[in-house]
Length: 540
Image 1: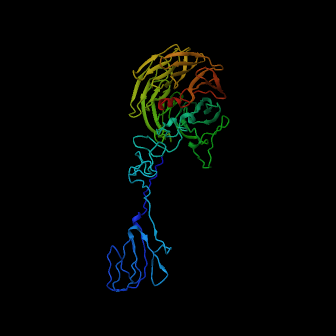
Image 2: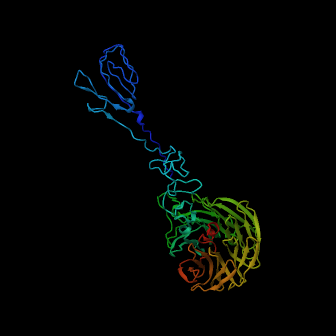
Image 3: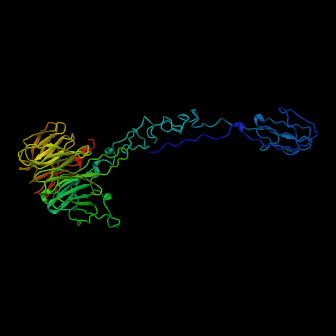
């Protein structure tokens, strides 16, 4: 932000502060001659200087001529006198005309900014150098766009006419997500789909449908992906258990070999060996004993940017796994390094480890278990665990909507489950159009979408009424849809694990507008784009 420049006042001299130097040579005729101070000056032998219109005392021993020069110092007039014995004139300093008297006058002072008087071309003058009031120290009236924040009137003033930076043309702060280049449109324009049988994850541009990179990840059989608000992805592998973080933008990758460039995948046919792709920021091995116990429920913490700088604080990641004793471990790690910051445990029971995960607007982590295993909430501040109960039926993928309510798909029983965060009551809206709704995701427009298999379909639910808009939307070419996600433009993505495809679907017409092929058993049904997290954190 640019501060206004202070304007210093004039230091010019006034008209009464002139300096006159007079040189006169005379012979003293009488030693006792005197004159009144107001009417005459004694003639002196030698040179006499007059400053400010007053003469120095004459030397009483000098002789003078009878000539008395007249000097009017009050009007700063230079007078020419002539020695009667010569024809050469004697002039005061600066006067060259021997016959004409010259008078010099000085006009009124220039306006002085800061003297409290509005004069000249000044718009205002409040007599101070405070640039936050309604008059700047340059004596210009304060206005939006002058680069100075007027206290109590303007929230900001960046001195430019660009309306989409941090300060608008109305001198109001622009929310970070609305600033050009700072919204989610750029960083969240990718979908990250795990290729379970290949131990890789694909980064696909959701606008063009082009696969921009394919990355080898740590561990084996990757499944859940979670994207933070910087666009970075965390991938959890079930066995061997591991978590991998991949940076979405090259400026966040690490030049590990210091060759001045980033070595990273450029597409599906350019998979670097594990450890050689410099966009893999870190990997973390998990001591889970076998496939069923490995990390699944995975979600980045929702963190809002600083409202003034729009810089994000450090990102943290939650994930859950299970030990041999059927105790669930929930770890929160440093997103920059993968170092474990917090760990809490909860008795989980038999079967698979915690299955689905999501984070709400306050950073609280929710984890749901498959089928009859519990659903819990971990408080972001106290780490206290709350058991949210178990709806009757077989639970599968889960998501949170914009209100903080939970929606859970079903692995059987023609159901979709809803949990009300205010009443802590579970309900089953039933009639899902088929026996399974696997992955499930809410969008910003009040819709909930499900990936239906048995039979193959897309499911559309109205969030407010908790009723189906359409529970059997056909998807040509689909085989066994498993995951669903929403991209930054609002399109619905359906991931089909046996067709090895991802379908991009218009949410209004239900038409398939793009297909991404070449995936390898894509088994992902979590927040693949980061828009589910943005729905919690960023106002819609």
